[in-house]
Each structure stands twice: as C-alpha cells, then as structure tokens.
Image (cartoon, rainbow, N blue to C red; front, side, top):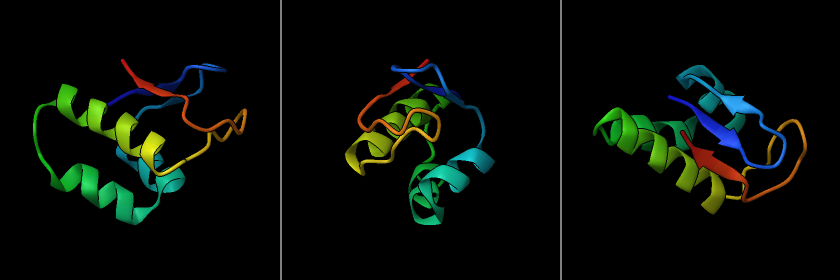
Length: 67
C-alpha cells in the first residue's frame, strides 16, 4: 500500500505508518473496509485528504495521492 505526497514525494508504504501518521481510528476505517489493494490505496489517500492529515515532511495538507 503506497500513498505519496504530491508536493514533496514523501511516501506512506504500510499499515504501521498509516497508524502512526493518521491515527488508529482512521487506520481501522481503512483496514476494516476490505476491498482490493488498489481500492484501499484510493480510500487511504481520500481519507487522509478529507481529514486534513498533513504530510509529516512538508506539513502541507490535501496533497495525498495513491500509486
């Protein structure tokens, strides 16, 4: 699972990082939904943008895209 900051290129590559940067509640929404890996990446990027999770490197919001 990879989502990337479109501003600086920082990548979140696994479930552990999703919990670290997005929180446990957001992580449970993503992992509990099931679906294909592509659907989970799309949903992860969408939820990070909707909840205003900033990029830990450049601190910008609404910059997440899925690969």
